[in-house]
Length: 231
Image 1 (cartoon, one colour):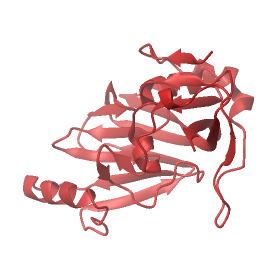
Image 2 (spheres, rainbow, N blue to C red; image 1 turned 60 degrees about the horizontal axis):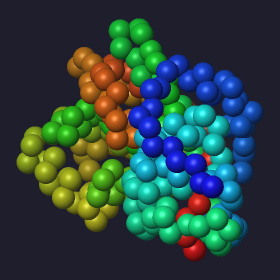
Image 3 (cartoon, helix red, strand yellow; image 1 turned 180 degrees about the vertical axis):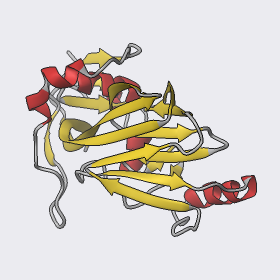
């Protein structure tokens, strides 16, 4: 039977990462010109996650094959695939995904957790820095060239803008044609770091409010899990 991972995660200092350290070590990220993923069948040990917060908890605890009912990762895939469509033994698409170790710090005190989709720094009205695994933040195609299995972390940095400018940018993000823009910049790499120049900012990880931080570091964990989607 499928296992469900729907309880609210209580994330700590990534003890799960140490326990499953060998699980993280892969180097088979997507390559240019090579088809992503493979065809397979739904395994009996598939974990069903209702959202990306639950998915991150499952991955942190070592689950390998998962499916997702809702989240920005599905927007990146161009699908609204529902896990209830998958039955044991059904044919499915098996897509390897990266996960991300996130360390949020405030005044020198830090906590580390696992993310699978987004890390948003700042508020909705005053965004500061958006990390997104698949490029999407809600309905916004924030980083059009981002891919959830390319071995990189991609983030969009926001310079100070007026409310009118932010509204215009957010509107253009729906189509993914907001870049280049003088108030926006892209950073990427295996490890990326945001540091505040104006005090601690709100941080949201995979849709859950984390608290406030003045520094956030994200490190890629390549090929951390396999997402099962309907063919």
